[in-house]
Image 1 (cartoon, rainbow, N blue to C red):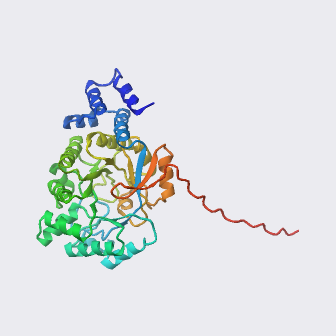
Image 2: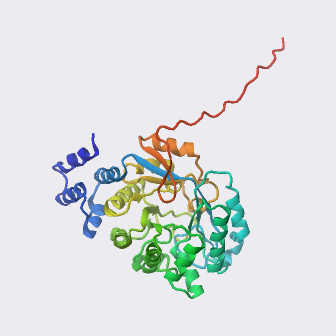
Image 3: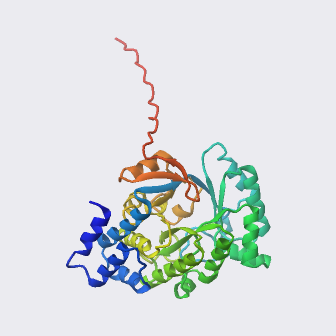
Length: 397
């Protein structure tokens, strides 16, 4: 059945609430839903209804195409001057013995380890420490680009930029221009958490505010550059806090058009100060992806981190508005595993990722960071893994 036909069948359901029918009408006619309608979806909409709407939007934008990239991570340190209650990854300075602090040369050695591999992106994000300042990161980005000009540098969140710019006594516009000149090419979406101070002050009080996070991305977009956005959900926030968060992103995107991807991040409760807070269910995860796809009409892509939510849930998400499941990754990232993600050793080969996407009837596309097609795997056949040779053993009579 055509996706649009599914939507029409849904709208003719006599048991569908009138207000949910109105939202479906808006989706069918590519009209924006309101803040109150976003809250209503969280409060009243069932999973099946949300899936039909979100999949309709997803396929209007991308058809069956599902994106991934080949990337690796550098995490400079897991030590941090901030004390976010939800964080399982970072350690305060007094816990220095539990952490690591890479030197610049050690980070460049990680880059060089991938010299003979077809990766397209290095993703750099970690804790906040005084020695990782504007001169440090400027030199690091420059040296990475000098060593491998084709490698896209996606690095640091507004949490880190706010800290290093304040330390350097420079404004956001000046700082972001310096980073671009040094070789920075895009900004990941981390550090957004929940923008509303009612929640942010309880879970991440010390670091940049929601407005400051948005201001840094806006300055980056003014330079003609692209970035991503996230939302940490499933902890102490209420539904309207999620909609408020997405509304602020939608308004900034209306102004700049600089966001590429929205990534809902599931709160994980292992080994952090909020371990008493239960995690969201898979049903709620899928509802959240779908509502994000419906609400953020001016975002091209919705991404699910397969390493955080499991391969199976990532596959399911591709029918609930998601069109990107991140990258091949490898053991360079500890952010997911330390938070209690299903994937404790988050690595998948390109073949495994392609098969994961194909197994649910989607069309795998390897992209670069800016969503240019690197390889279309729709009809690609992988060489069979070489079979071991077996030799007949002599038979002793």
